[in-house]
Image 1 (cartoon, helix red, strand yellow):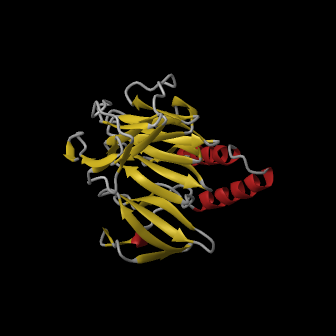
Image 2 (cartoon, one colour):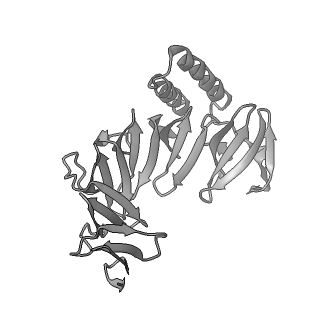
Image 3 (cartoon, helix red, strand yellow):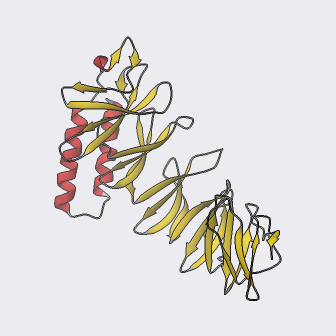
Length: 280
């Protein structure tokens, strides 16, 4: 019951944090409480199983309607979803105890990290994170939300009111909402953008005091970056180093595994990711 009470409080905070009208908030709030009441105390759902083996292909039915099994995240956790008249609602199910980890209130559940016991979820178009042990750890108040790669902790890029920042799994703001865009670059960096300028930031040293060096950036695969400064182009490596001492008047590509088309002094050639000239 403690989990249910805490969950209800966090859902209420989520809905009241949106910028919609009070009438819309009230209707959505009432709707969420109805859904939560149906799943209070995490009722056992024995009829979901046949000899304790989950039927991953079939649909199941309980008193609330048809329930289907979605993605299996681990030996013990699966996504379940229920189609309603105008929407499909999602929850998480623990196989070993045959109980719902979450009620059917989410419009979206994805990117479950079993290692970190956390999943990205959405309610009414806003995103947050659910701890698969039974807590909504980040209220659904963000316009977008994505994982960031860092082995020692869980980080997310999130947006609010059109601005981007970085938070951890406790909803602590590590990078304030002052950027127009934040994108992953390699395993340990992000590209940040503000007022038409772009820079590279290490996930190990997050700060809004970052040098915005480039006038334009384009991701070339996941681990390379094409940068433009004024009218010249170059490549940047995952180690945040320029690949070539030569700057080009044009760098384009038709696929992340293909060479780049380079233009210099009015002539075209090909270079690879290491900056080596393949064709003059």
